[in-house]
Length: 275
Ligand SMILES: [Zn+2]
Image (cartoon, rainbow, N blue to C red; front, side, top):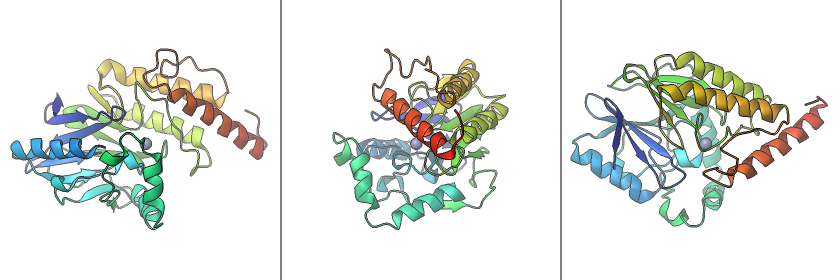
């Protein structure tokens, strides 16, 4: 089930939207980043880790979207972390008693029965500006930015040459901007890409939240591809982007693009600014 992508770093790719769970081996157990989506898949990861004699000693959610906030009881009771802003966002949502029911409505009907929501979002926020995940293993640097979701963290495991991008730098999904909670979603996204570019120097393996793992040659190519998309979106140009073209992996992504275009147009009309 688990596939090694670098020394001491393994992934599990879900059947749901090519979601990647990332396992980082530490001294006394593993760090599990974005554990997965389907209950039986998380249970299988828990089993694999048990067989390897590697308990989960810490969890991390890259951002406050449901498909990155799940957990299976079999994974144990390790602390689950996120950035302060990520945790505050999810705490706020969980305080609404109707929220879980609305999450269930966003999940595709064919899998909703297989997504366990009872342990959804039970994460501890790390203090703002925390530079690294606190755990006994290779240093995992937190690169926090405001693209895609509040308090989104991409993670750099420098000594393994691995960048865990979260929902950025995907080969199957376009940049999905956080159009609800930030005043400057386009600028925030471009700033995040610059941050990743600055951190990506020694990266050999890029693991996106959804999609294929990329090698060293893919890091800058995907940053450029995402930047070109965001520029086209900003300028209301038609992007030539394979992720929404005729050979796209997911046909619904073109709909996401159309919606982003429309929301940004309404926003600029409201703000009275051209473009
Ligand atoms: Zn997301």
